[in-house]
Image (cartoon, rainbow, N blue to C red; front, side, top):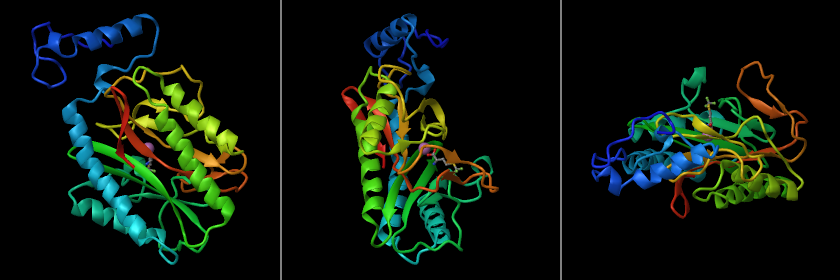
Length: 294
Ligand code: MF3
Ligand code: CO
């Protein structure tokens, strides 16, 4: 096979777990991938393609992930500390049988990322950081259940927010939606970044390049890297069964970011301008994609 994996015999069981013969199941699909690989396209290894059973597992994990963010949505507001949000995420996740994927991930000290105003990503929750009227905050939550990962994030506007901040939050969501709409089976990962970037640019905003979406499922971060600034028609082929996140970080001001925080995590806009991010997790399907978490 194109990815060095063994190919089942025509009458053997298919690798996808359907219980059907390979020739009646994924043989033609694998031949299509093989041909694309031979033509020089970047084709995902079969190990990145999720089986129906994997998708069910990811959906069970995602149910907790979505539930956590719904809980946050109901309770967040002025006067809440980001430390409290961290405890909500830990408690909700563990009470539902899951593990917060962020906790201890490469030494990360909390269960969730809370990124306020000029913080691009990886804001660390703290009992000393109280959310105030007019803040915008991204709550980025990741969940493990039975070895399956899910990952999504939302923006929250705290009380009355300035029109400029509200516009940044809304247009960043639209940029993400443009990325989702660009996901077509047998298209390319680069189609997503091209769509996100075009929308952000049309608003006069800039797109963070150092971070992007990522494959996910059996691990937190798998291939491919999903840049939010890319050329259409480039990058990995969007094969049905591929699962990844789309999570643009969009700045109201200039593009450069500042990664010098001594805590080793928190990323800010270099010019101190506001920034926003939304994140969904999708699976490529035969006719587009399905949202798994949001
Ligand atoms: N949730 C982030 C992502 O979207 C990763 C956070 S890693 C952490 O990929 F360690 F900072 F939590
Ligand atoms: Co992510």
